[in-house]
Amino acid sequence: MNILTTIRNFIMNEAKRKYALTTHDFSYLEFKTNTGDEAKFGDISTNIAMILTKVVGLNPRIIAGDMQEALTTTHEMRLYVEQVHIAGPGFLNLTLSKAAIEELFFELLMQKEAFFKLGDDEAKKKVLIEFVSANPTGPLHLGHGRGGIIGDTLARVMSFLGHHVDKEFYINDAGNQINKLGLSFRARCLQELGIAQELPEEGYAGEYLIDIAKDCVLAHGQALKEKPAVFFELYAKENLLQLIQADLNTYRIHFDTWFSEKTLHDDGSVQRALDLLQAKELAYEHEGALWFKSTAFGDDKDRVVRKSTGELTYIAADIAYHKNKFDRGYDLLIDILGHDHHGYVKRLKATMEALGFNPDQLDVILYQLVNIKANDVAVRMSKRAGNFTKLSDVIDEVGADVARFFYLNRKADMTLDFDLATALKKTDENPVYYIQYAFVRINSLLDRAEAEGFHEWVGQLRTGTVSREQLAALMAHMTNDERDMLKKMCLLQDILRAIAQGYQSHVLSYFALELAQHLHSYYTRNKVIDKHQVAISQLRMLVVFSVHQVLSLCFDLLGISKPERM
Picture 1: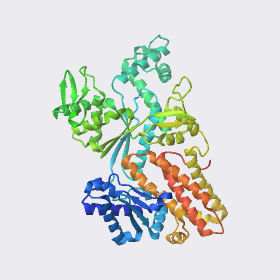
Picture 2: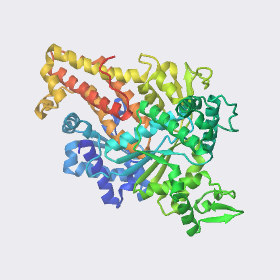
Picture 3: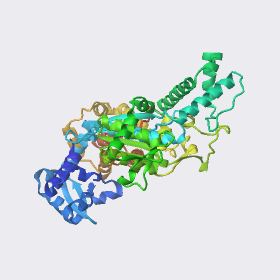
Picture 4: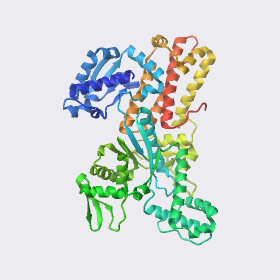
């Protein structure tokens, strides 16, 4: 627990008590520290009154007034909160006391990463995040890189906060695409044996199958002529999965579970799910096909789950798969899919409601396309021309650090322009270079401080042995610059909670860049190492060391490396 959490919890608990609310009513509560120009609105602002106005049916300024009264009349809060103002339609702006700022700085320094985690009394969820889930019919392409970083960063953030998070890759290894893969691979193998063979219509013509076929021929030789279709399907699928796993490992994404769609068909899960819908009279036969009564759940028309030919549609297995997820006891399911699944989301939620699950416990994040550019000119996606077609191409070219950051550096529902020219620069124009340089700069500065007579103080910072008395003495030298830097670092606490609630992973990359900018500006305005002003230097070293801790956490959550030197 820290000062910010204490104040946040007080406001929420006071609202719950006064208006008989539940935690669910605060789903979109914003509670943020104000830095820079926004500092004129106080140290902390919250939109709680606007969030609750529809719930309790009161004017937001009345709600804000109730919260203001509680904050200014409760003894504990009066120790921490110096002023409370109501602005605009009902924003609450809080100015912290000197004692609160001192306590906040000490908590940030001593608690380290724990400062940003959920408290023991805050609800933790069991969460399953499914992402990437590429068909095992080819290498990962550019779009998978975006879905991958959104899901992996979200998982890292939620897990860090204290939620139990599992990451899952759904293998689409059943149906026509696997049959076509097997036929395509068999053709490539026979071609390698010198046998004239055409690829099947709408087969997979990628050169990656040629490489796998060469290895297969070396291992099995002429015996391949007699191998059944299932051999080629399994061989190609397993080798392509290994290729996908290798790319993901390079991209620093590791899954807890690789779930096979085929198992749902083999163990009867798909049929049982359809039978359950029929038993509930939510599926019916018509013209030889089986239809899900999705109009009963707000869809514009009913949907086929089994064609008159007996072939299952895409959603049939997904019904069984998501039932399986809920049956495993997760509180929250998060799917991360390409934007082309937009119309599918409502349908999927409808099937879950039909089976008796809460559709609000299933959230879907849709991400937009990725364009690769160089100096604002689109790069043609053609492997024959030597340009970029695969995720591995991008990682090989710019490295995992840059690939992860650039793929995350835009809101998911916006098209992402990945500029290779900027990504390859070793200058401040490249945001990854910029934030890593800030991290390295702090290391160098502290090393220099040790060499210039501050060895003991730097040692205390690095070992976390700064005392309350030492910190209190330094607070007398605090200026608005230090106060602003402290609040900027504390802002990460609310950002991580907001990401866990609203899934906007990209905000973390924005924060890391802004914190690095704040550091560079602070360093420019303030001489950190000055043997003639020991106390002031110690305070400034404390500030930059704290920034180093916060940047280190951001790098871990973003999945990027922490260089020692650049």
